[in-house]
Image (tube, rainbow, N blue to C red; front, side, top):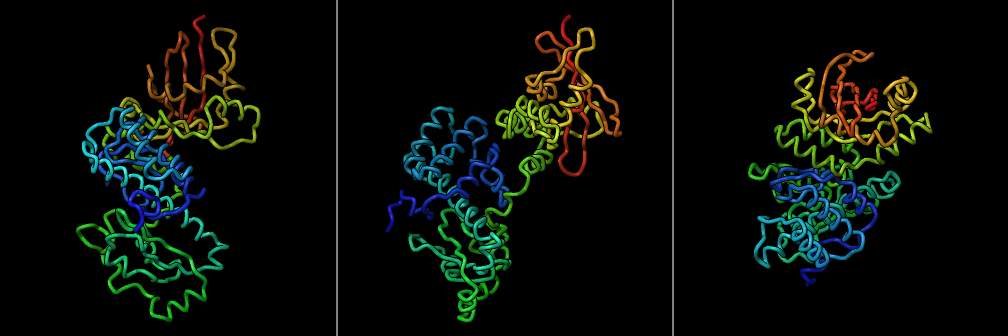
Length: 400
């Protein structure tokens, strides 16, 4: 029997790049309960139940990613966890106070992240068009190392179905806490021979949902999905969809935490320098989310809770061409000034309203920073998706 602390005991082997990328590319979302985020939302979000502080989540995610990358294993993660808890002053977490409780909690965090990321990486590999040509069937494999196997999981062992069978949409492992099952892809010849042997159909009633869990029998609550299917969902859109339906106070706190650790591809200053030098660049830079939606909602018709703050590539060019010096107190905006855009949105001294040339609502924000008056104009974009405040222009007046 494998050592309970070994990687083998928690059901995955040597980590690989697709698995590590899956973990690294998640956005940290603070949550109070383990089921605040469920199913495919885990493809985009990193969460630890009860970990609601940005610094704490950042440290926990880094520890998980590091241990996946170096193969340090559960014992290394437990050491990381102990140091992170002490550093961040995290108390009151489930399992705290006893050696057994701490061992259980660290195992759940580590094993769940490793198992789902391993499954997501395998899914990406197995759905590659070239792989599917050679291996169009998938087979369910139950781990021999499980001390107390689930009867349903044992019954699914060897089940071989076409890769697009609806069974896999809900039964792709892990199928519960501590589940060590996995899927392997097989050739058409192997798949057909297995089907002829009576393994080509899942058990009768496999798709019936248990009202107590909301999932099929044999699958724990929230595990009835295929890890890796939602990795291509735009991360910003995923978070926005969550924020819009959250209570105002939670949405505001979430926006503030995310903005502190925004996963932008580059800084606003570097982006501005690049788009001014290369006018072929068209994609905007995501700067974060609106935090003070209540103040802005008082002067615009749209509810901007959960709106993104965007810096379009054309904005710095327009500002450089048309809003430099005016012969008086106005000065040209520098790349460093664009690092203040989110501050202008979220800490405005004055907000007014009008219309842009395209007929969209215009949000005018003014703020005094280090003796200079910054005036920025944003277009309010309320569309069905990618709701945003998009910078149109920026004017800076000195104290002269």
